[in-house]
Length: 194
Ligand code: URA
Image 1 (spheres, protein in one colour):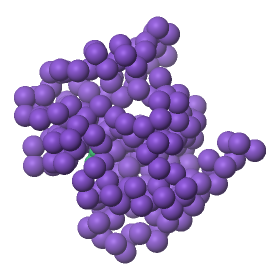
Image 2 (image 1 turned 45 degrees about the horizontal axis):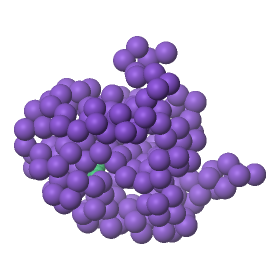
Image 3 (image 1 turned 30 degrees about the vertical axis):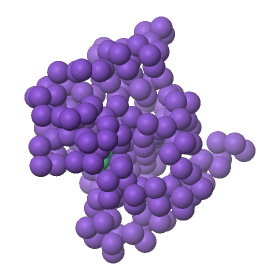
């Protein structure tokens, strides 16, 4: 068992939200406008994990509401999902300045909140949006360009990484590969109900 994980069976969404509110575990707490906790179905089969809030997310306190979020909504729609059917959260809950990658110290300071969310949702399938989340949960040297769309076992759950929607906005030539990955995800979801 992971020593740093809060596996207490009496954890609850209410407790987690109140523990997390006002978090100052790292420097990002000083510059945020809003902490971005997570959104979606608290009993979802599928949990999407991004990197960290951007400008719009920081302003609105909700993950994936900026341009990348609009594309994520379209990606979900392609496989008959929407935000009410999945849970969406990030590795870090506060916006890194100028949207830089969250630093290793910031990730470690924040990851306990996400782990408690994962324990509470208890999803069957994890989808990592981009390299950063995949490197945290699959392998530190995970290569998104080579390994997106492959299935892994992460702590007993089926797990796949796909390109981050921001990467797909920057480079639309990656979209066909992501379409294939999304279809594989859809099949995996369907197989849960066989
Ligand atoms: N990018 C992320 O990784 N997460 C968000 O919530 C928004 C943009």
